[in-house]
Image (cartoon, rainbow, N blue to C red; front, top):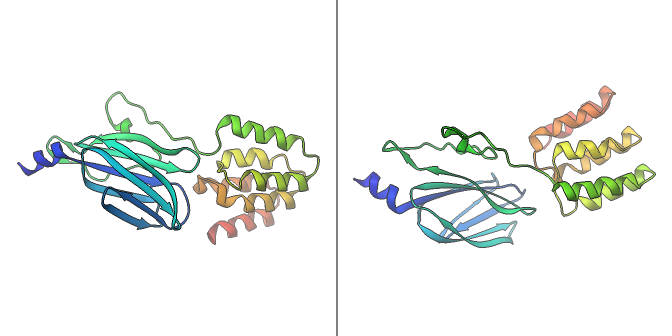
Length: 216
């Protein structure tokens, strides 16, 4: 049967790229360019496949990855943690092709009996974040905190939860608001950015955040 041959001889690879820009992902001799951040490769050969990722025309990643026939390998890439495999799913179950059950940052291994969902952690590694918090504590004024945060996030990414903890150290709402909006590009879980508005008491500040989000 054709389905049996496909299941035994071919593999799939889904890659989520958690970086902004025009991304080109190449696996073997297949290439996809998109800004969506999600890339699906079908009918790949079993074994070692060369993967390259370019962002806005600049090489960002190059490595060979072994993939197993009959499985859909799901991986996530970002500059901080490079390429990470988060799950491997059976392409066929009970002789039927599994539909696109890619869940992005949720490990779909939870659908298998006895497994629990596992989320990929966003943002800085704990030790890196703790160093930033300590450095922020040493700044006596908001101007220094704004500058420090901008420097720290120039080549790093952060979660909304981490950003909120840092913004809580600001003395004045005006500086806190500017720092929050200027940090947006470095936030990985942008869908949660609205939570920043809870740091502000005035409706006018919350409205500025709302308008900013709607313009992205």
